[in-house]
Each structure stands twice: as structure tokens, then as C-alpha cells.
Image 1 (cartoon, rainbow, N blue to C red):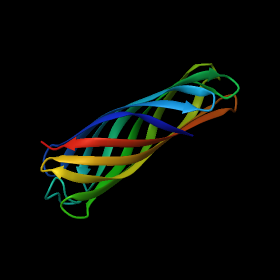
Image 2: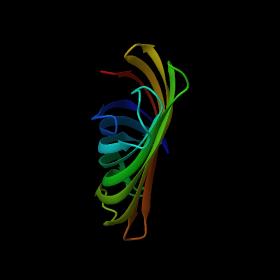
Image 3: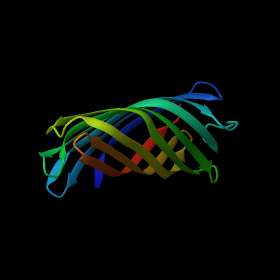
Image 4: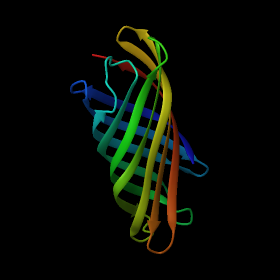
Length: 184
């Protein structure tokens, strides 16, 4: 498990009052005991509102399907099963915003990787034969100006790979993500 500090850039475009598209890029520095490195993620998804969306900054719930590509690069250690790994997955997810009032909103979400393709580059522990990919987040947003919101999010990402030789490697990344959201 690691606490990562990094950066995230997200875009969410409502195509109409029902459908949306999301894209995200994320990069975190990882430092844990004797291991250091980085974790990166690219995410692309299409979604649909599960309730009527009357106001873009109001309460809403949406489901999504998408593609996610992640890469973890840690100091190589064959005993600790650390090194360079990548995981791509088709995922389903659900997210929501709950407006407490006109200036404060709570948000959260969960993604579950269903169709996964894993690759472990170095050191070679054997061929990966299975994996797990789960992500979740929660946080709050404060309306600072009409179209500018200050956002604080806590996210958890869990990745695991199982190898044909019986070994498995997992990575849990906890991230604190302060950000500014601008509505157009």
C-alpha cells in the first residue's frame, strides 16, 4: 500500500441531458519502504445518467463503460515481486454527485475492471494468468465562483496480478487529489 502524490487531469462532457463522455489522465509518484517509482493511468468512458439531470452542478447519478490503461513502475526486486507492470481493462462504473446546497457537493464513484489484459515486464515472474482492477473515490466540491469549483478527492486504486508459477503481486494506491473544476 502506498500514498501517492501526483496530478490528475479529467474532462467530463455532457453530450445532452442524458449522455456524457469522460477522459482522464493521472500520474502519481510512489514511495514505499525501499521501493520508489511511479504509477500512471489513462481512462476513457461513455456514460448515461440514471436520473433526470436538471442542473449540471446538481444531484446526479450516472453509469459508465470504458477503457483504462495503467502502468506501475517500481524499483525492481524479484523477492518483493516489484518491477514494471501494466494492466489494461474494459470497465463498468457508477458515479454520483449529491448537492448539499448551491455551493457544496459530495461526489463518489466505483469502477470495476471486467475484461483485463495484463503484462509484467521486469523482472519476469512468469506469465500473468489473471488480475483484479478496482478503483473508488469520494470527495467534496465547493463553489468558489459561478463556474469555478474547488475540489478535494480521496481515491483508492487496487491492482493485483496472479502468475502461472503461483505468485501474485498487488498494489494499493491511496491518493489525495486537490483540484480546480471549471464549468464551461
